[in-house]
Image (cartoon, rainbow, N blue to C red; front, top):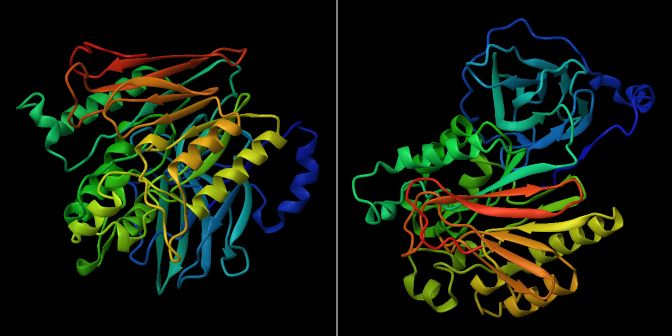
Amino acid sequence: MRVTWKHSAARGERGMREKRLAVFAVVAVLICAAVLPRPALSAEGNIIAYPSTSAPVLLRPGDYFEAGLECGSAARITRVSLRPGAGTGAQPVLVSKAFDCREHKRLTLAAPVDAPVGLYDFCVERKKGEGAETVCRGHAVSVVQEFKPAFRFVVLTDFHVGDERGGKNNPGIPLQELRAKAMAAVNAARPDFVLLTGDLVYYPTTYEADYAQALREVLDGLKVPAFIVPGNHDLYAMMGLGIDGRTFWAEAFGPRRSAFTYGPFRFIGFNTYNWPPAYSDRLDAALIDAVGSRSLGIMGRGEFEWVKQQLEEARGMNLRPVLFAHHDPMNMSAFAGDDKFPVIQRDEFAKFVRAQGVEYYFFGHTHKNYTREDGDTLYISTGTASSSYLPGEAWSIRIVDVDAAGNLTMRPFVVWTPLVSAGQ
């Protein structure tokens, strides 16, 4: 599901657009209710398609954005609100009154002009039988004072909830505490946003607990919006046990891809683990080893066409494309696909990236900090935040500064132990 939003080019446009809001007129008032803990996920799945935890929207007070709902069995929506994080002392901000979800699945909304700057959950309250239910997408809306000409973002990757391999490097270190240190390091860098490039969990037999824990750590730990794409460990299947990582991802985080604009750049995040369950089944070791899906990525044709469309739109907007994903082409399988699963082979995808003039491609997966060049494209690998790492590496994040002229400078930042060989 693609996430889009609109920014007012001038305050004078607002009057014209307000006429089109109709039922969804903005109510710039604060709800006089106590801030509650985040509601549990809906029993029938999260009905909020976008904005979401994995694909948030950044906007200024008064800016417009789009939202999409999948109504489920309860069609009567009583209100839509932006809910600040628990413990902030702030109150939820109402952005829509009651409506029928069957008639209005896609909404044009706006943050009130006096909405406080901050990170919000996007919440929908709906009738459920004789009662009511509130479902939210955590950290789905970020209200900012301005879009800065010079800005900073952080790349965070491979923190692997449920993976004990990180303990091999330094036995006795609590890995949850280590992940918290990584989150704290991100916050201390004061970035405008985060690119989280996958492998949030580890193994499908513990997906239920680990996805819940990963979501909790992201929402409780990060104080800035994060654009999140999945890695191979997030999307495994165990068909005989009815386990499909794609379902867990959708429920916890939302879409597996997104695109957004900041400054002169169009950031395009996509899923490089497009293997269908028949090819990602961890119960079929012989098959996944034969095709390479135990670790390697793959570009399904559908995902490729979406990336291609995003790059075309970026050119149309005169924006410089930046790609972010879990795998780079060198870490994709050589599997040629079949009639049921058409793919773009890794060499073809690498050639496509070169031809499109992509300047930067951020990725994870390798647990190493390094860069490499391919034509005019700089590929940037960021090390793991809390899993196993190779000699000369350390648990780290990557800080990227963009100046007002659009020039990038970047460096790895060590979360715990000294980085002996930082790369670039």
